[in-house]
Length: 274
Image (cartoon, rainbow, N blue to C red; front, side, top):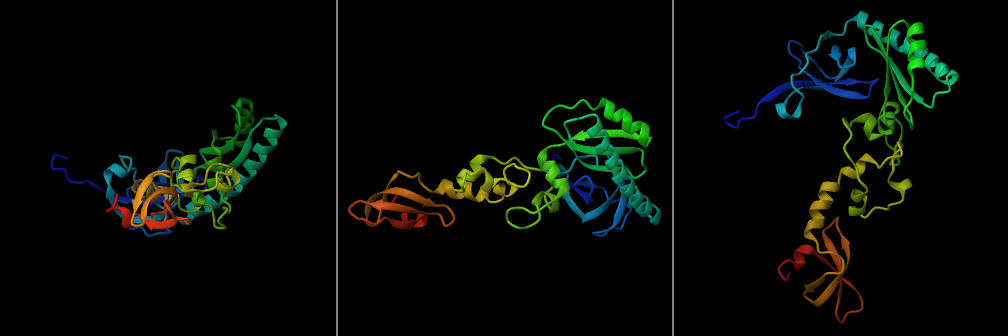
């Protein structure tokens, strides 16, 4: 606003387990705790989700406005309908897989979900190429008697939906706490002196691991304080040349003129000399 004051929005984080997404809603009129089941109107339709983050105030720039409001707290009937929908979704998934095989379509079905009111059934799939699924939609619509939505997703979204164990031995970050995916580049691995062997820096999805991003800001900041390998540098023992860097403790190995063994210095030790 004109005074430069921050405008805050009261929001609640709702987790949709089947779609693997978390979205923010306005909690107006409802007393909500983590774990509560609620019914909301999402972009996919009428859905039931669970409160992941209790109501909190955030800057309005961090959320998409206008915020949608929660329709109602989930009732016993909603919970029963949700459980029935999951059972029906398993049957719909089996039907879709069978139809895909019959039509010899190059697509891999990932999961299936009904909206709470069963006005629509959503199939998520992956494919390496563009798929003409008009016949598939026609068959499914005739047998399931509802609207059909087929969504092609990426391999990272597939891993988020299915879950699994990462190279670290823990549950995949994407399926546990990460929201939206952030870009990860091979440069991040290079800056952190990691092996560039694809099998060592790739996640279960086959793409670069999301955790390469976690410490990247620190490495960039620390790297900016250090010279480059090969730079001439002055030390208390004389002039030398940088032959190695240790970004974690912001230090370097220096080959000093006249000495056989390289010496290690913290950057702070050499700042006054250089």
